[in-house]
Image (cartoon, rainbow, N blue to C red; front, side, top):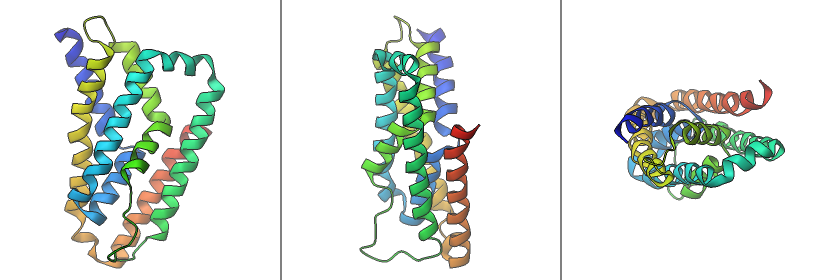
Length: 194
């Protein structure tokens, strides 16, 4: 098991800490609302990604390979969802947070994003294909991924928290939100258009 586990851990770390739509939204959420408010979306996103790995390992990945139209439809839903999130970031550009305002990325929104994110599904198919063995069951893969993804995504929230003081200026916050919105749009649509 150890000869398979270490490469899996490295792969899971690279997959979970690399920039992607969910990590960018967690970065923005951490910057605007703090670490404590980001815990729910982080837990939901990481649990959803781990559930996708488990589902792919239990046969859903084969179904997606057999029916590429389903995967294509999921990609479009994901791109539209990310576009909506980018629009929300653009609308919030530069506006200071007020008490009682929209809470940002909800746990349900973070989990849903993972479920429609093509990167999560492609990563899950790769993980299962490369690392699932009788010695390293699907349950272990999903659990180990969860344990790696949680601190990885928390690091993105902490990066946002660390930048919060710099973002107190409405001009800087507007630029930050616009930059993140642009990155979300590129990440969403490049998967479909390339």
